[in-house]
Amino acid sequence: MATVKFDLSSKSINAAIKRIKQIQKQIQSSIQNEFIRLSLLWIRDNAIQRLNSEALDEIIKSKIADSFSIEYAPGIGKLINSSDKAVYIEFGVGAVGEGSHPNAPVAGYEYNVPSDKKNADGSWTFTRRTTAGIDIKEENRLESAQKGGGEAIQITTRGQSGSLFMYNAAMDYANNPAIIQMLYNQAFNKYIK
Figure (cartoon, rainbow, N blue to C red):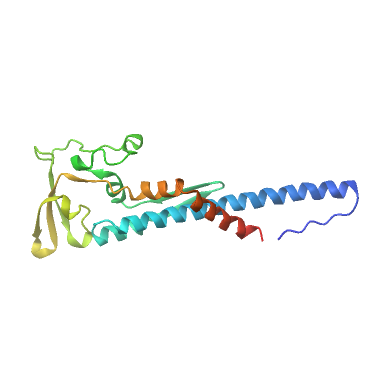
């Protein structure tokens, strides 16, 4: 805790007032940054809970959960997921995914993109090592067959809907004043005792 000393002269009192205002700004900045940090951790944890409730391959869920990071600058925080699978799971993919995420147009995310790999019905087939995890839910597999003695799987799909695990976690936060107040109180209490 900061200490401000002064004597009863005009010069000393003015210096003390100036120092108190500096301390106040530092505390306000610290509270704000801690509140941002706690908020992003809450959203991340909520997103991971939502992701874990999805009927997805455990390898994929683990890769996405382990790919979260948080970046900070004074008064600003970013929650980032660097997994190459996170965007497909969040927004969905293919004809099945089209229209399943409310932020797709804002993000410039496109569904059912033309490709020479697609069949006439909009489906496509891919092969993936089973140890890499499969990012298409079983319910969205039109066909699947083991390859290479079970080391790989060949899947035909038309895509899948977005899970919105990040979007829903952020909306849970934004639409719940009690959570926001709780996190702010935690940040405040860390610096004001």
